[in-house]
Amino acid sequence: MPREGAAADSMSFHQDKLPSRPEIFDFHGVSMTHYFTDNWENIQNFQARPDDILIATYPKAGTTWVSYILDLLYFGQTERQEVVPIYDRVPFLEIIISSYSGIYLKKLLNPCSASMLCSLHISTPLHTGKDLVDNLPTSPRLIKTHFPVQFVPKSFWEQNCRIIYVARNAKDNAVSYFHFDRMNNIQPEPGDWTDYVHRFMGGKVAFGSWYDHVNGWWKKKQTHSKLHYMFYEDLVEDTGREIDKLCCFLGLSRSDEEKKRVTDGVHFDNMKKDNMANYSTNSIMDFKISPFMRKGKVGDWKNHFSEAQSEQFDEDYEKKMTDVTLQFRSEI
Ligand code: PPS
Image (cartoon, rainbow, N blue to C red):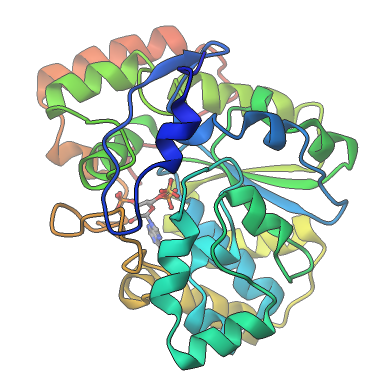
């Protein structure tokens, strides 16, 4: 359970001061940090709307990519894309950090973006992902979560919302998460790579076990028909094909030309140089350590895992991933 006073801690740092690294603790059986549990009651009581779309992932599985695809499919390339970062267009529901959004919004408050934000009815400062969702001017609302399936607020199920789950092979996911934890000041200290692999295998990272996460959501797909389960590797292999599937799932008819525009717009190289997609406006991340848009590849794990680590990982994987209907590709 969360430490007492954790909420107060999280609210206590100033906009210009970096927060200290949080500790991992057990929260209802899942490793979490207080940044994602301090707003628990409010999140559990969150009122979803029937047309809300939830983008659910284990961290580093392709959330931003799919968020950007959906944002473009629904709202096209507008001025909004030029001034509002993706993390404010598709808010991270469970996050709570004092001035988290305030930092972003403050940075955006040049005369042009300030008037844009006003016209979008976005006020500043906003303190939680939920506040951002509640203030979203768009319809549908696109919402991001990293929660394991059992933590999702019940109103999403009651309202029968469409949910898109993105999964990524365990080894690349671990590598991406390791570099993210190195550069993100609100993530726990990752330690060195060897330690990290063990922590990842043991589920001792924020949002818990990758194995439980991907399996939990896979099982849910059997009973919730409005859940589209997709894979990062498929997106890399053929982004256009996956966008077609998304359109089908969402009941969207878009011309080939529009879909091509989206496919091109969300190419890794384009997103990497787009300041509204690449998190460069986010002051809790240190890009000198590692960029958010890092490599965007399948198989980068080969540059990190030693042979012995890979063997040990595979052995452990076989024991945990017993459902043969859920298959990942760690190379394409
Ligand atoms: S987060 O912080 O959990 O929301 O991160 P998330 O967006 O889920 O994952 C970040 C990784 O996704 C890669 N990415 C992409 N790959 C290919 N193409 C595109 N367009 C793309 N956009 C994001 C990003 O580079 C991170 O992976 P790594 O392996 O670290 O490069």
